[in-house]
Image (cartoon, rainbow, N blue to C red; front, top):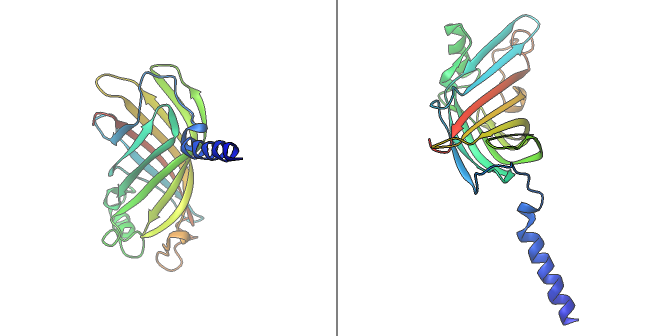
Length: 214
């Protein structure tokens, strides 16, 4: 009985300790261990583009004020974590007056909430597209929290990660395409605008570029 209990306890502890690596998906690359990737325009121009399609008006724009970092283990893509911020003041729609309204209290309120923040907790459902050196490509769902207008919501976004081995530092490119509900983040706008001139849900596309040596 004592031997059985001891073996059972060992199996339980082993299962707990190995939970983070049991279902790990990785690239077939030379890079080993957890890497910190810093978003940097030295690698490529990171940008978030957005579009609003409403009955009376269609609006498109982008935001380039993106910063942040994340950690990734090329041998365990699921364990990726990090934090990305987008400055509200960097939002542009092509019309300066509209941009001022967008940053104002009726909408994103840049003074009170200067950034949109995405914190990634893990990546689920990882599927390898390519894993041969020097470049690995994987798709999955980025799970975490999104904070817009001071309101934080649990989210899950489709994501594509490209990991490129280079000298002197590796390069990582991330793409995602998702939507954000204004109502869920308490963005009401001026009365009668949302639903007529501004869509209730905003479509967003993000392209990030980072380096392990930034």
